[in-house]
Image 1: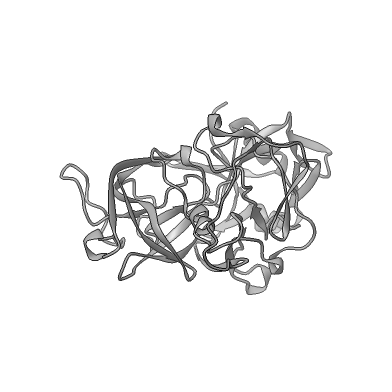
Image 2: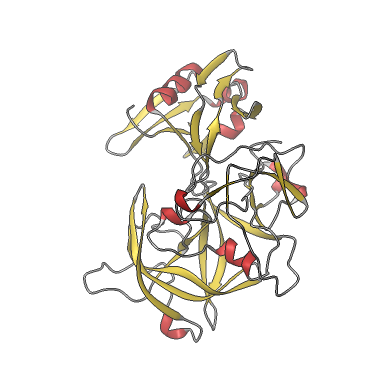
Amino acid sequence: MNVNTVLAHLRPQHLHSSSRKNFKKGPKRPFASRGDLDLPQSKYYCDLKPLNKNPPESRRDIVLNHLNNSLHYSTISIGTPAQEFNVIFDTGPSLMWIPSSHHEPDYEELPEYHRQYNNDSSSTYKSTGKPFAITYNAGLVTGYVGQDSVTVAGLTVENQMFGEAALYLDTFANTSIDGMVGLGFRKKSSSKETNLLDNMVSQGLLQAPIFSLYLKRLGIDGGRESHLTLGGVNPDFFTGDFIFADLTAPDKWQFKIDRIQLMNGADTLLESESQVEIVSNSAMIDGPYREVNLLNTKLGATRIVVPGAYEMYTFECSEVDNLPDVEFVINGKTLSLSSKDYVIKVNRILGFYFVKVDNT
């Protein structure tokens, strides 16, 4: 499997609870059957009981648009009649949120260039009266939880809970992105809602709570578009076998990585079975300050500091094709990133995809 073109998030049936105390010990068997896939059985599980009122779709593909080769988004609709919004599908929180046209008196107004959901215009809207809050690295998103019909890729989920955001740090300033759809777990947000994917299964729209991502950069992979697949995995977007890793936390897409290395293990950069988390709302690979510095040094990158903003590492264009692969060893299997995968062109500068996140 080529890691730069296929990133499959296989959502096992056991991850549907908001806290570890609600999880039960799973049976001692290596795999659990799930549709046409065999998924590994983790130590935690929670039974999923779909209603199956209608024959389920095996999977549904969504074409993703790109923003500066870094963020990928698509259009969904909410309410009756439909109100359309551009959203990122985020593996962090479970709750989806959209800018609201209603604001508390002491809340700042949301930027005019974002489309805003007006619950007064929807005949299928229901108020829960519950507040919500989601914490991101860039700040806090707050508002109230509502319920309405939500349509994604032609599938309509009834009574889907979502956040009507009254205040948030405008991470998507001057972009066409309005909000986010959560594909994570409930503990990431303060409310007790069920996320969109789980509701698609419980309402009989999809057969399995699985999603997969095929992400690409412009000019790579023969012009093929990026895709999100709900309910399964599209075989057109990968070759070879899947590599499975048990999740190590009930509230995030976190798992154990054996090590990060260069040149087939000749140079190890990160080991001791470190914990990593998969996130879909960033093109960067974040890492510990010391290890990212070490990696850049070994690759021969030049450090550039932008005062008051950030620092980055650059390469001469003529050097990029000769850079070694960066290898991630997961569950004893090696996934390789070539230089075209971890170097990005920014304002005619070749920068690095690995970012330092702390000073430890």
